[in-house]
Image 1 (spheres, one colour):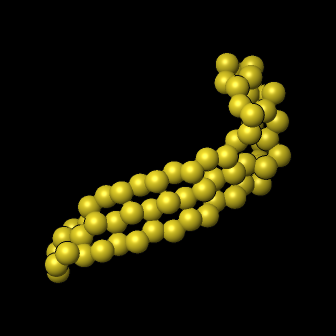
Image 2 (cartoon, helix red, strand yellow):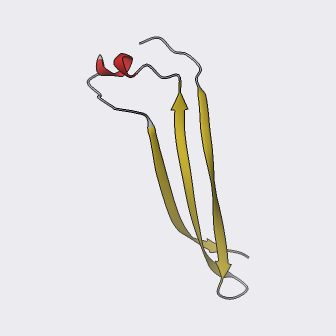
Length: 65
């Protein structure tokens, strides 16, 4: 498969909450979508998709010094 550039959308947001001055938690939710992707090109590599878009969530701990 040949490399090419595609128009891609990525949007989302997150929050952070501190329990005290040094320890906190954070969360993030994002949406990704690639436009103009020919899904038949991916089938040659063994991957099959109806469309290429997905949500991603992340959580973590936050420490300050």
